[in-house]
Structure formats: C-alpha cells, structure tokens
Image (cartoon, rainbow, N blue to C red; front, side):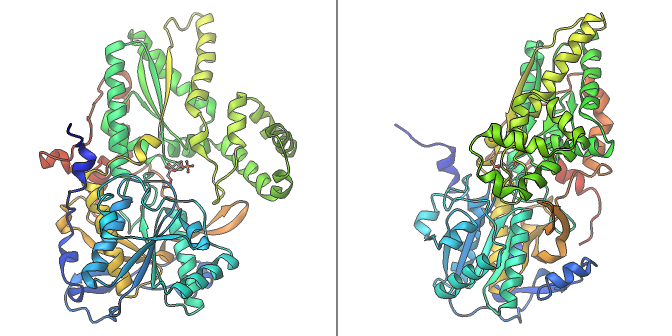
Length: 556
Ligand code: FBP
C-alpha cells in the first residue's frame, strides 16, 4: 500500500532563499539605514540601552562587522498562536547556523517562554528536523502564551542562559511576543549579558504589519485555507438557495483575515470591525445593516447569502468595547478575590455587582452563553479570548427576532434559515503555501544572520514580498522603533501596536467599490485549495492584501 501523501511529499520541498542570503556570511554586509523613532520620552527612558539603533539592510559586499567566529549555541521559541511556516523558520535558522559553522548548535525551549523559565529544551538535530520541514504546526517544540516581564523572571532567564552558555535567543511571535523580545534585549544589555535577542514576525492575524513589516508569515496560508472553505460554502449557497451562512473568521483584533477572504471570495456582506468602530455603530446598527440586505435579496427571491464576520468584531462595537475593558479592569484589580471563587455563577454575580448600571443593563440584554463567554479568563497578556465568543450566533438570534417583528408587520415575507460557522483553528496549522514556506525559511535564515552579526533587540524583516523570493530584501529593524504605550489590564504598557485595517487603504477601498454589487448578486469566487505544484501563477499567487498594498509606492 502506498502511504504517501502531500505532507510527506512537501518535506522534500527546498525553499528559495533570497539572492542576498545565498552569499557567504562574510559577503553579506549589514548597512545602516536611517530610522524613525518614537518621540515619546517614556519609551526612550524605558529602552535606554536599545533605543535609537539604525535599521539594517543586508547588501552584497564585504562584511567588516564583528562576525561571531567561535561556535554558537542558539535557542529558539515559538510564542503565541500557531501559524503555517513556523517549522521553516527553525529550518532556516538551523541551516544558516550549520552553514556558517557545523559546530553551531540550535536548541528549542519547549512550550514558549515558560520553557525557558523551566529550563526545558530539546537539541534540534538534522535528522529530526527533516520530518518537520515545510509542515504546519508548532509541534516540534510547542508554543505558549506566557511572557517574561517581571524582574524575577528576567533574572531567572539570565541565570539559565549564563549557566548553559546560550549566545542568542530567537523569539518567533506576534506583537506581544516581540514586545517581550525588546524587553528581554533591554534587560540583558543593562545587565551586560552578551546573549542577543532577535524576533521573527508571526501571526495569521496579519496585524503585525507596519512600515517595516509588510505582512507576518502565516497570513498567506491561513487566508487561502479559509478562502477555500468560504468559496465552497458560496457554491453551496447558490446551489441550494435556501440558507444564510454566517461565517466568523479568526483574527483576534484586526479584520485583515476577513477582508482578505472577502476579497478572494466576494460574499454578500463583509463586516469589518474597524469600520464599525469608526462609524461608532451599535450592535443594533450592525443588525439593521444586515437586515437591509436580507430584505433586498428576499425581494429578489434570494433568501440566501453569505456573511463574513471577524472574530474580533465584538471588541470594535463601542458599547461592548467599553463593557469588555471595564470587565478587564475588574478582573485584574480583583484577581485575588476572584481566584478564590468556586463557581462561575459566583464570579458572574461579583463582576456584575461592580458594573456601572448602563453596562450592567447592556450585559443583561445578551443571551446567557454570551455573558459567560465575556467573563472567561483573559490570556497572560490581558486579552479577551475572542475566539470563544460566538458573535455569529448572537447576530443570528438578534436578526431572527427583528425579522419576526417585520414579518408580523407584513414587511417581510421571506424565509430566514441561518447556519453559523467558525473557521479558526482549521487554518492555523495547514501545510504552508509556497509563499509562507519560502518566506518563513528566509525569515529564520535572516534572523540567524542578524545574531551572527551580534545584533540584539532586532526583528528579522524581509521586504518586497510581492516580487519573486530571489529579489526579496532582507535585514533587521530595531523592535523599539515599533513600540508604543497602550492601556493593558488597566495600566500603561509598552507594546507593539497592532495594525488595524486601514479604512483609506487600497484593500478596503477595493471592497467598498464592489460592496453593492456583491450584496445583491452571486458574484462568488471559489478559489479552490492551495496548490503546491503546477503553474507559478497559481502556486506562487500572493494575497490580495499584499498585491493591493504593493500598488502603493512604499519607503522604508
Ligand atoms: P497570535 O496573535 O498569537 O498569532 O494568535 C492568533 C490567533 O489565532 C488569533 O487569531 C486567535 O484569536 C487566537 O490566536 C486564539 O488562540 P488561543 O486559542 O490560544 O486563544
């Protein structure tokens, strides 16, 4: 029996390395470029040792830098949610380290930052790694959402690194994890520890993008997987012609995934959280907008359609945002009392008793399952777990109620059969697309080049991603350049700001210019599954977001 499958076949795929990284290390010259820094003096003071460093671009030339000559021990962790391509980052780091010096060693701490504190790691060897190349998931060394920020944690980490002689740590993570990388790099500099810290931008959410990072790895594959699923639903819808499908898509804070999937599939309605926030729409306004389309389509004998909803929508609705932030504060300030509570009912009563009356009334207007979901524990970064909040079902319930009223008034004669879906975890561990396989590998390789050159507090960046991988630009950007001050758990925190959908940006404008047409017609596109072999126009297609963004000339 032949047990071969595409996952087995993909392990043999050789990612393309950008031309610049194909050079020998001594011919990769790190050139300093001008940087823009935050003017905020609080940031300057907090990162006194790592603030004000230049952006680095790698160019072909003679590297006169102090390249690490002795063999190195490098550590890596995954931090946060899975994203397709993670194992290729590790493969890229490994291959670069071994190419430079076969004596170099790579270890992976298990389960994210917590693994460093527990000093639990595995040595990454070639024979084991070959089973993970070009595969999805983070199961080689697992991931975690813990962060290292207290002085006790930082000094324990320093102790382990000194004892085990770890020369560098590469953190593969999103905005919170890379903020963490900046904090650790600053602490080590202050303590005169030589261990370098470098970050790699990862998240399917696509919200770690800015003037330096075009898109994090993982977004490409995840959105292609969701687009395949949504495209299939669209075809089902116009075949059966009897259901409204409410599809909630992952993406904790920003609506990039929903917008991208919408651009790939052309559903009837795309709800974008950032637009809801800007127009200060209430939950009821959102429901009314959806009903407006349902009624229009019903008049055309089309009691069916597809609606995309971002997972993070709930936090964009101003009234609910206020409620969530207030609950966050209550949970944080009263964490010791709440920890002692034995039942959820007890916790719910306690929190409700602390809410101001307008927020209490709002909360009581929700179905009980939503109340329970709003009160779930926050993650270690203080974020609400939006993936557990069933906004799709909440909208369906509210729409049902309003349509029933309209029906009784004789203003609606259609049938509303709604089906809800949540596409989230299905997309996070898929086999990386060619784009993500190449990009993640290059990011890892590039991160290793940064540490070999002794850079610390930098994020590995690869730019010009809409071009072929050979022409991608590589380098490093000081993480501090991306740091802002935000309120978290009720306190000011230094964080890399999440980038939300730009309502004046070309991708969103593309949706707006098609909105009416897509609402009333079945302009659906079913893009089909990701292709790994075949015509390059299909296998190497980049996301609409990247294509459209790159229409705009960008300076770094
Ligand atoms: P990261 O920001 O860590 O990459 O997480 C992405 C994500 O997939 C979000 O889209 C989602 O809300 C979250 O992780 C869910 O993860 P968890 O199950 O750990 O809460």
